[in-house]
Length: 254
Image (cartoon, rainbow, N blue to C red; front, side):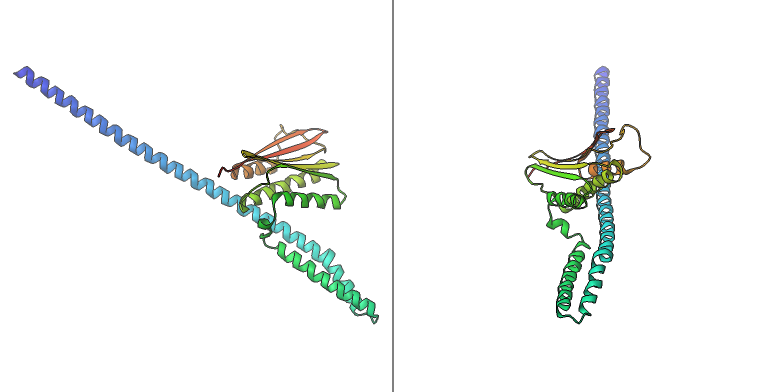
């Protein structure tokens, strides 16, 4: 009887220890899962904060560029038109006065066009492809270099924030080519299918050794901005042959 009692006690004791182990395991798993949830939520908040910061910085830079452009236009274009209009309207000749009135209407049109660029509502009204063609046309009009634009696949469907970031990256890529590459030709292509969109910015300029770490942060910033919107930037350059920048953005599935 004593042996049976001892065996029963041992069984109960083992059962108690197993129950404690199971409860401890469950508690540890719950705590671990909760900690992972907290870390994931914190990571999501950090990604969202970085995304919002990137968009705000892009908007700030675009506004600064627009203000500089407006200032140049007011000084170089509108200022000259105002001077000519004043001279013509002060003339005693009817035909000069008539020319002055036409110039006033032209000035009004120019100022209205400039005022529309002061906010970023134009971003929603223009496609990325239209923006690229507009930028290339500016280079062509300035006789800076030859340009080319190619498009295949579906038109890009982007929300305003992603479009803003891409616009800024493309602007910076073009500006870098103008400042440093001395190209004879700049070519931009847009290819889009169901899985991804691919934008190539290519020049035939001086090129550079991209394996050597630069003292500047321009390339890093562009790559970081692309990553912020869920994309990737791939750079390839050959000395004496030019540079190609690929902007890869996965398309969101409906």
